[in-house]
Amino acid sequence: MNKVFGIVGYSGSGKTTLIERLLPEFARLGRTVNVIKHSHHDLELEPSSKDSARFRSAGAAEVLVASPYRFAIVHELRGAPEPMLAEQLARLKPADLTLVEGFKREAIPKLEVWRAATGQPCLALADPHIVAVASTGKPDLPLPCLDLDQPAAIAAFILDYLDNDART
Image 1 (cartoon, rainbow, N blue to C red):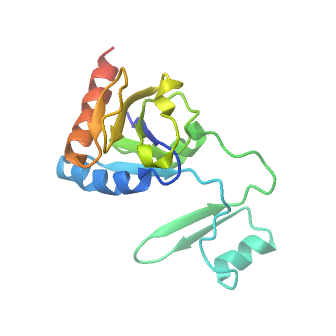
Image 2 (tube, rainbow, N blue to C red):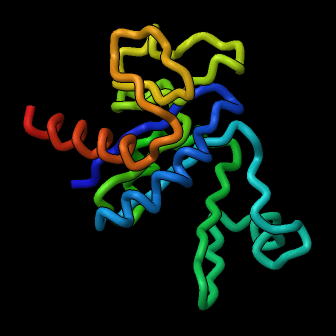
Image 3 (cartoon, one colour):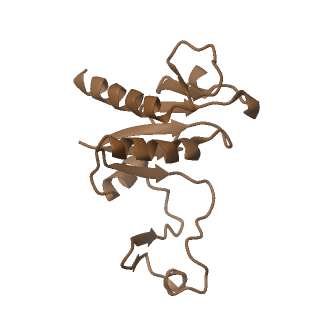
């Protein structure tokens, strides 16, 4: 079964950088990992002059661009509601783990990346689905606080949490 774990935090806290650092750790442990990144911005995947963008502009519901190196499917919502996380997960190939950046309101286990320098409060204080905080400091919280500069330890925590959560 595909396990899902969220990485949340305020803009500029280091969520993407942490995921970049976690991926090689999971690979080293022999785990396949997918990533879903939520964005509040419009996605510009190719310039408007490219064929795929022209097809979407002309009315295609989905365009798949394929090359010897990768493929991408772009699905135009055209005013339809944004798909829920469960729908997005169903589109992915099975993996040992899917990391989700964003979707902070989802009821999935999450790790918050928190830095005092952002000037923002800890989300963990109001979100019962945040199971740990990764930070460069030592926030005073009633849950595990992990060193943001130790991605191997964070990867081990996530896997241990998901393995133990699956037994309950």
